Length: 165
Image (cartoon, rainbow, N blue to C red; front, side):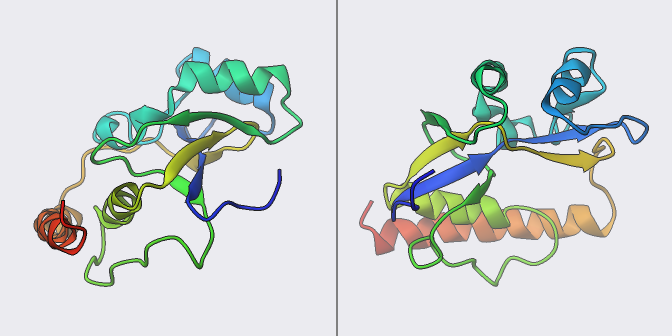
């Protein structure tokens, strides 16, 4: 891969797995995805944050050359997208320190990147796997998430004023 472009975010697909499932290679990831032991990260509770990767396309592109990391394809930003990504430190919008705990921190950062016309590019042959399947957020995490949702709505209004949207 060549050096990072100022206005590109290079996305890394994220999965979650049953704790007993071992993933040490792309074929293992694909097999366990097909048999349901691996799924899209937070599939049950926050599908709208991670479903934009187009996982079938990613598996198809990665299968062609699983040992080489490339930009497989571009995707359009959609509100609430919360990807894990690589980007240039001197170009990516700063993290908003008002977000504490659980929820909306990466959503807000990616929203600002989209407002600034960043391009979202999905990398092939790299991925992250969370150990364990996410269930509903409750307790202090749910309270933090509600407050962060309020902050995100505030952030959207601030960005509309800042960028004259």
